[in-house]
Image 1 (cartoon, rainbow, N blue to C red):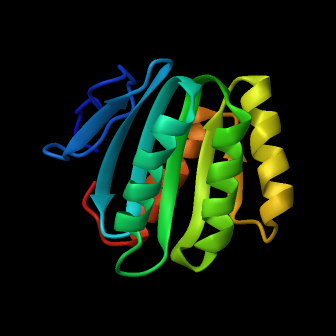
Image 2 (cartoon, rainbow, N blue to C red; image 1 turned 45 degrees about the vertical axis):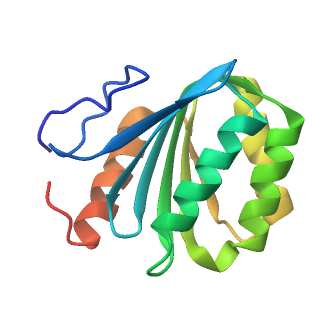
Length: 153
């Protein structure tokens, strides 16, 4: 992968050069969203996940899956918490749009966020959510999906 930092929230996850990324902020958190190619989306968040950020996630996930089921990569390593309303909105969105997603790959560090992902996974069922606690495994999966989709390194 060519070195280019996903600007906005200061993460060191490397992306392709010239990948357009947009950063959205709420009063308590921020998310940078990048469509890495057809059906591959990366969302890099920090702070607190609240309902205003959900709208940006939903719009980006819908866009990423317009040509078939998408792999969604959620880098939530720096996410410190979330509102229960945000979890409810995201869970309902994934349940209602399940056919649009191959998998949502979620990197977590904070225990509260990991518990929320586990709860959502039980509610949604079917293994559509895959949680990672190690960045190297998350990035390895991202590279594998990009390679399988024919996206350049």
